[in-house]
Image (cartoon, each protein chain N blue to C red):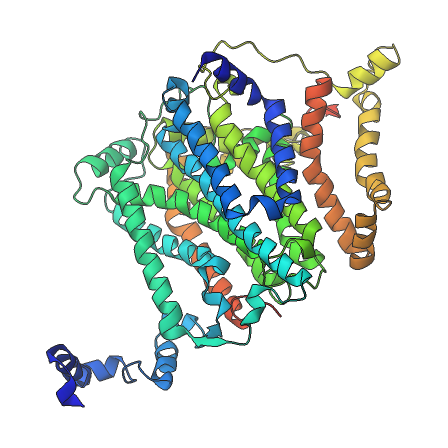
Length: 359
Length: 265
C-alpha cells in the first residue's frame, strides 16, 4: 500500500474521526437495515474488510498488533460481531417486510408445531458440541496461548492494558476518573441491563426478529453494546499504544509521541474566562457551576426530553417510576459520548473538580 | 422381524435385553414417541430438556446455539481446568514455571491452550447469547427474571476470566490485573482514593487507607503478589465456578418454567 494511503488511514483512525465515523456508520446501519443486509451487499462489505486486512498485512506495525496472541480473539470478534449483526438484521428485515404485507413473521408460521426433543434437539446439541470442540482443538494446537516473560513488579510495560473485554472501561478512564469509569459506570451497566425487561412495556416483538416494532429499544441497546462497548474495545486493542496515546493502524508505537494538550476544568472556564475573576478558594463555591450543570443534566433533561414525541410516548407507556429509571440510565450512558465531545472541542477536564470527587 | 436384522442389530438386541442394560435404561429403544419421551424423562442429564418443544426453537438461525455453546464451554473449562490443577501451584515461585512445564513437557500439553482460548470464546459466546436474546425480545414477560439471572451470569463469566488472567503470573497477567484492580482503589467510600473515604475516621485516624481498602481486600495486600495469586486462584477454581453452576441451574430451570425457548406469542 502506498505511504500516502497509509498516512490517510492513520488520520482516519484518529480518536475523533474514528468515533464520529463509527457513530455515523451505526446510525446508517440502523436506517438502511433493509439494504445492507441483502446478502450481496453484506458480502461486498465483508470483502472490503478482508481486502483491507490483506493489503495491510505486510505493514510491520499493523502485523505486530493484529497477530499478537492475545489480540487474536478480538480480530475474530470483528468478523463474528458483524456476521451476527447481519444475521439478526437480515431476519428482522425479512420479518418486517412480511408484516407490512399482512403476513406473520417467519417464526410465527410454525408456532403451533411441536417436535420431540429426542432426537431432534439432542442431535443438534451433540453435533454442535462436537464441531465446536474440533474447532477449539485445532485453534489450540495451531496457536499457542499467550505467555510473556515472568511477572516483574519493577518493570511496568507501556502500555499496561486490562484484559481485552475490559478495554471499554479502561478507555473511559481517559474521560472520567477511576471511581466513575471503574466503579460507578460498570455498576450502572449492570443495573441498566437488568431493568430492561421491567421497563420495556412494548407488547410487540417478543420471540421473533424485528426492528420496525422496537426501533427505540433496539437502537438504545445497540448504541450501548456496539458503539460504547465493542467499538471501544477495538479502539483500546488496536489503536491505543504507549502512554495510552492514539496510534493509527500503521503507526510505529513510539514511546515519545508528543503528549496531549493540557485540559482545563469547567471552573476555570467559568471564573477566569467568563467572569474574569480568580477561582474562589472554597471548592464548594468554585465548583457551583459544575454542580448546577450536573444536577440540571439529571433533573431537567428528563423533562425537556418529554417534548420529543418518542420520549413522551415512552412516558405515557411506562409511568413515572419506570420512565425515571430508564432516562437516568440513558443519561448516564450518554454522559460518556458527551464527555468525549467536550474533551475534543473544549479540552474540558472536569465538570466538577473537587479532589477525589472529580466528574 | 429378528431374522431381517443384521449381526450388529442382533448383538444390540442381545445387549439391550441383559439385566445390566435394563437396570440402567428402563425404557425400550427410542423409536416410538412414548419411548422418546421416556428418554427425556428418565435421564437425569437430559431431563433438563422438555419432552416437546417449539419447532422454531430448533432453528440455528433463531437461537444461534449461543446459550448452549456457552454452557458447553463452561463444561470444557471445568474439565480442562481440573486437569490443569494437577500441575499448577499458585505461588509466585512456581506459578510461571508450572505453566511453562505445562506447555512443554506435560503429555497432552494442549490443555492450557484449550482452557485459555475456550475462556476467550466463552466471553464472546455469552455476549452473543445476550445479543440474540435481546434482538428476539426473548426477555419480555414472563422471562424478565431469567434475563436478570443471565446478566449476573455474564458478570460472573467476566470475573471468572479476569481471575484466571492472573494465574500464569507473567507480565501480561500481572499488569492486566494491576490495571483492573487499580479501579477498586477509587471505589466510593471503600477505596482509599475514592470519594468520601477520607471522611471515614475513628479518633481522627483514617479507617480506609491503602492496606484496608477494597483493592487490598481483593489482592490481600497492596501489590499483586503471593496473596493476590492465592485469592484469585481460590476464587477462580472454587468460588466463581460454584456460583456459576448454581445460577446456571436456576437459569435452565427458569427457561423450562417460563415456557421453553422463546417464540412468538
